[in-house]
Length: 259
Image 1: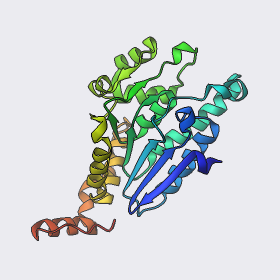
Image 2: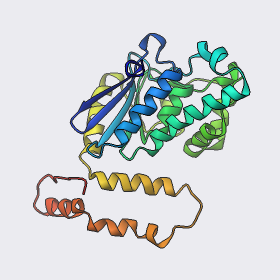
Image 3: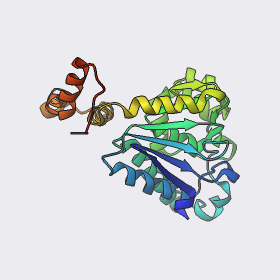
Image 4: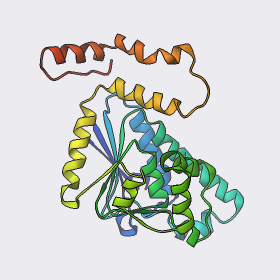
């Protein structure tokens, strides 16, 4: 069932993970959360992958939680805690993925769907996409881990605006407030995603992985130890570094091998 709810497609070094409940606008239930974690962890373990695209089937990225399962799965504090930890495991898997991740966002991107997008490195939205977390309308409280992700990305003021008003943001407003990387006209959306993926996938994979790890480390207030401080300098020992420099000087396309 999880294989049907999260589709995995590969094209060369690029993997596309698709939330696949289009009849429910990809509303997230337990099986979909678990299927997405499994898919992301499998992709993360494959060093030949250069870029991961996360998207939704049909006309929505993800319309939020499947409220139909709340009475069964999230009705008591204990149930809510278990379910919440399961969700965070999936979100952590996305954040910790060593490969560059891109959320390709069409239509509704709400609640849990928005949390998934926020955990990706890049978020590109079609002009008609819509964003929000209107959980105040049903009395849900966003747990600490997810709340921290929003505050880190868009700040305290915008996070509270989103949660207290419960208003749906346009793609333009979402970009202005830093929620998405950029927006593109609906007719140009597929081309923009393809071009972005090509740019990312053509880069040196070890450089990408190190940049991701370094940026994440900067969120930790502990001082860098000497080994961490030297990581970027030590990267000149990579084969890909030497290949990149030589290719530039020889005016050819580099052949990065991830070494």
